[in-house]
Structures are given as structure tokens and as C-alpha cells.
Length: 199
Image (cartoon, rainbow, N blue to C red; front, side, top):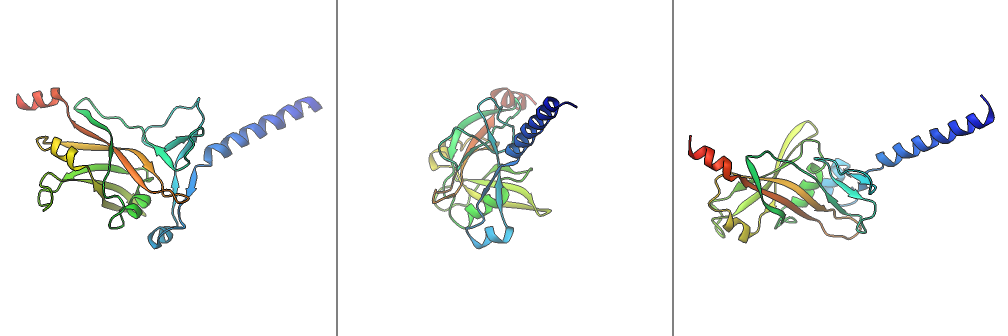
């Protein structure tokens, strides 16, 4: 090979190496916090995207141009039997009873899911709806409460039989920034309700 071919080859290899290094640089270290976080030696995994890249489904991501480094989003889908009730519902009570720690342990697992569960026995609000999280952690299923939907939303949903949810935005507790969680709330579609009524 002549010198020019060698130089071009080296440059091409360098570009490929830098590209994959960037794609794999997806970790924000949050293991400096609580004892529970330290026990798991936890890093929270997400993708960092350039403007020309498409947001992935079912994985946390942020775009390079975003100013706040601790804000992550997740894109989700659902079938036609569901419809979107709330695009970004603030989850309440996320820092009570180690809920923040539980999310940080569960939230970036491949099978992480959020679902809603009514709490009829809640003495403060009979319409209360818990936001629950599920993931497999260290080979074991983990189910934890992550918070509540707002009292106003719970009241609006009191007549809905079936509920579901998807993760939407997380504010990581990173460099003195506070933790927060937003979800998408789903209810059954009109077509699904009609179909069930006719059965």
C-alpha cells in the first residue's frame, strides 16, 4: 500500500473508534449518594444523541444540545386499545420512603415498566392511584411504589376501569439537582370500550 492509502485507512479507523466510543459513553454516575445506591454500585444508563439521530423506543435518552444534563426522556408506544389521557403527569411524593433510590435501581433496567394501581383504602383520598415500577434487578423481580398521580388526575380517572402508564421524563438527582419523574397516563380507547360493551 502507498502512503496515502495508509493515511486514509488510519483516519477511517480513528473515525470509527471515536464514533463507537461516543455511542458507548452513556453513563451518568449517581453512585455517590445513598447507602442503597452504593450497595448496587449504580450507574444510570442512557443514550446521548445528536440532532440527526432518532430517539430510541423504550430507552432513556437526551440530546447533546439540551442544557440540563440530568433531564432524560423515553419514547413509548401502545396499541389501539389504549389512548393517551395525560402526556406528562408529574408523579407526586417521589422522594418519600426511599422511592428515589428504588427508581434509580430499577429505572434503566431493560424490562423496566411503570403501571398504575388504585389505593381504595387510602384514608386521605379514596380515588388515590399509586405509580408502581417493575424491573428485574440482579436476576430478581422488583416491584416498588414510585409515587402517586395527582389528586386532580386521580379524581378525573375515578370512573375508568383499566389504567396503564409509560415512563416519560426523569430528572436525575445529579450535581445538586433534584429528582423528579413524569409519566404518560393511558386509558382504554372508545373503540375498546364499545367492543367490550357488546360482548
